[in-house]
Each structure stands twice: as C-alpha cells, then as structure tokens.
Length: 348
Ligand code: GDR
Image (cartoon, rainbow, N blue to C red; front, top):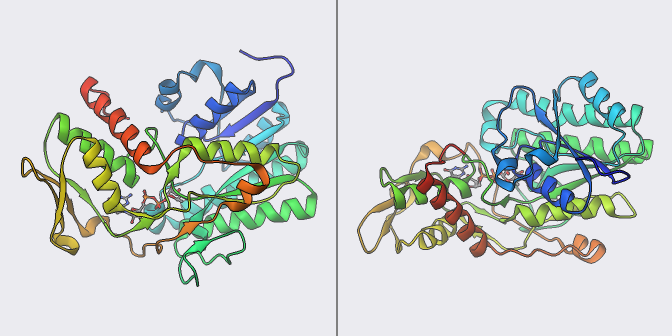
C-alpha cells in the first residue's frame, strides 16, 4: 500500500538479512518502500518472517546491467537509496574474485552513474565493510582514520567501491556515503556465516541429533553486532545534514569459540573444550555428546586479524546506540533455529 507524500525509498538486496530488517524499520517510520531483488531469486523467507512481503513494492533487477538500474532510478525518483546487494561471503571471494568485483565494485559504479544521470537528488547509502582494514594495522582498534589495507578479494572490492562513493560525493556533489559495517548478525542471517552455522547446527543437534557441527578457525576473533541495530545506523546516516562515512561496530571482541560456547549454553548443553588446533573438540559435559569439531576445510587462505571498531563518531554525531549484546543475540538466534527444527522449517 502506497502512502501519499511519504518518503520513497529503494533498497537493493531487500531479500537479504540487512535489506529485510531495513525495510521493516523504514516501513515502521512510514516510508514507501521499494525493494530490488536479483533476477531469478525466489527467496522471500526473510520478508515473510517479518510479515512485510506484501507491504513492499518488489522490483526485479540486474545489478550488472546499467540500463536496468537507470530505468528503476529514473522511474522511482527515490528520496533515499540503500545499496545493500552484494556478494557478501568473504571466503568465496578467494574462489571468485572477478564475480566479487563485478557485484561489489562495478555495481556500485552503475548505481552512482545512474544516480548522477537521472536522480542526483537521491541520498544513497552503500554497505562497506570492516574487511577493508585487513592486516598489518598498528592497533586492533579501528576508526574512520585508520588507513585501509585489504587482504582478500572481497575487501578489495569494497574498498574500491568506497573510493567511488567518495569520488562521486566530492566531484559531483551527490549525497552518498559508506557505512563501514563490522560483522552483524541475527536470526535472518544466511547459514554459511559462522554465527548462524553455529546456531542452526546446535538446534539440529538438540532437536534431531546427528553428526557434530564442523567449524574452521575457532580462534578467529570478530566484533559481532546485531543487524537490527546496524540498519538503524544506515537510516541515521541518510537522515543526517551531511554525507559522511561512518564505522558501525560494538567495540567488543569475541572468538568463534566464544560464540560456540554461548550458543551451546543457550541450546541447553554444558560445553567443554578439549584438544588443540584441528584436534580440538567441544563436548557436552552431561551426555558426552561431541557438539563440534574442527576441520581445515573451513580455514581460509588468509583470515583477517581480530579487530574491533570504534564507533564513537556515529554515536557522537548522529546519536546512534546499540541495543543488543552478543549473549542476547545468540540466544535469540538459537531460539529461532530450535523453533525452525521443531516445525521442520529448516531450509531457511
Ligand atoms: P566474515 O563472516 O567473513 O567475517 O564476513 P563469517 O561469519 O563468514 O566468518 C567470521 C569468522 O569466522 C571464522 N570461521 C568460520 N566462518 C565460516 N563462515 N564458517 C566456519 O565454519 C568458520 N569457522 C571459523 C572465519 O574464518 C571468520 O574469521 C562478514 C560478512 O557479513 C561480510 O559481508 C562483512 O563485510 C563482514 O562480516 C564484516
């Protein structure tokens, strides 16, 4: 249903985790929300989960076709555009560097060029990533002043896109900005990402049993926040007086082992860890059940070092606050997955 005179917004990647949460947030603020989805996709489960599929104008489009984007922006004359569609799985970017560049850099150029040509007054948000900082940093606390040093194809693709965003802002005066997002999760996360892989499999073990969960580097450390909190930061950035890039992070470091422990306790296990390296296992004290094992299969050619973000700039300038903590978020994810296993809705 279209609301007369409400701000018009276009979200690319509306079927993804962030797209769905952002659409939900903007609908609750009275926006008219249009969402772009990849040609051929039929994955609307996140929008269904939030009960908003029918409230969004869904537009099929092809990011790599300049004409496709141009036509949508010309026709829509949106007040705000959130470009979230991307190849978001870092590990795959080592295997598919060209596809990653096309999706994450060329597509951003297409969006910017289309806006410059047919919709220069639209405000645009781009989802960048903490991965741009990569390795070799003097401090593990990152701010907007930290020089980027990407160390995987995904990170390079995002950093190149950030430079295009800055170029179009400075050269053509477009209101465009990048949110440098640290890891952000929730029950709508895809199953290939480590948080959801853990909660999905812990729920499976609890409800159905079967083989242990197999993970990669348990020592990998990240700054994990909540997707619901991070989409609010996106909204604030486009409501601001000035287009600027901001870091969005929690400032807290946890390891994959910490996630596994939190998740296992939420699922009702009593986890203990034994062994080291690829021989490390996580067991339930009560039953002796092996909950998780480690395999080199899930190690990356290079894992970005553990770092946290300093989000004081967005907190001070735009009043952004995070509402969720890691324990609450993992527990919410475990509950959602236990429920899915109970009702047999395990393909999401
Ligand atoms: P990441 O997220 O690469 O940080 O990118 P992911 O959840 O895939 O990995 C997080 C860390 O966990 C380690 N790890 C494993 N990861 C996966 N996927 N599977 C495993 O079995 C496993 N075992 C250990 C990884 O090595 C890594 O260190 C996310 C994405 O959302 C990006 O799009 C975004 O830009 C960044 O976060 C910020």
